[in-house]
Length: 381
Image (cartoon, helix red, strand yellow):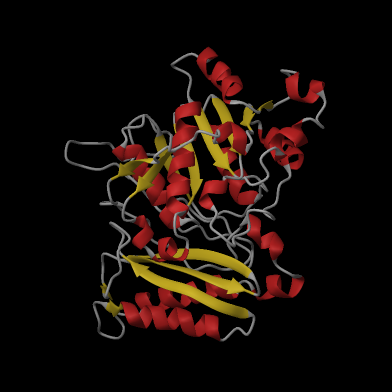
């Protein structure tokens, strides 16, 4: 019998709500964090909230500058086998490692309903961006669960699934220092059995610039996040803004599928020279890494052009002018081998804009520095 793929479709994005503006210019060595901000439910405690009134949204307050203090299906399980039983099973040694759905669900069922659970989904190769999410979860929740899973369904043909960094023991050690209680580290066979046919497909997102560049990517993201939310059943889940469209996808599926979870979008954490932290930064050569700050510098040019509009006697800026400003900076760097896109999208539904006024926009880009694909974004408001 031929199995037919079942797709659980999610409505197209209709509202991204407000995104917080930049508070002050980026200056090294401070870390600038430019934040996507969403309405929050009453039980969210990640930020001080404006009191909710009927017909009125709650908004997260923008944080200030802070410095940063499967294709390989059996990878996680094989790496776990190298850990001692004492390390993985001793309750005094955090976190406890769970390679199966049954194991993490058993823990979840034992937790009292009034206990708050913070969840940090990752693909491993943890850097300060990930760890800042784990710290926020530790600060705001009774129990913290992280997941480490390189999700094959969000990688396209010719992408870096085979070489994506896998370092489970090192990642677990980092999470232990923060005080994470449990790590869910399944392999692909656990998450996608041989008869798996059901996917979550958020309609409309393949039409964004990032979606066009990576067909099927957001279906993979939506599917794995839905599965993880169903397994872990967290109170709060934490994601970084660097993957702007991905954050919006996750917010939409949680709302559209009536999931009882608060999706917290946290600031992009940057290196001292402005480069957004990413696991893929490890692919950069020394020379490429030295030139990588050009990516964020190009976005800052768009900000300057937008902020100076009143001095020029203009209330709006042409999106083409913003795009050309960013592109010209990127093109000035010989090591930028390809500019995938520079997108000027509205803050409500990530749709292309022609003019940008007081309502603002999000400027996002993807480019290749040498052979490494980098993405970044900035909110203009």
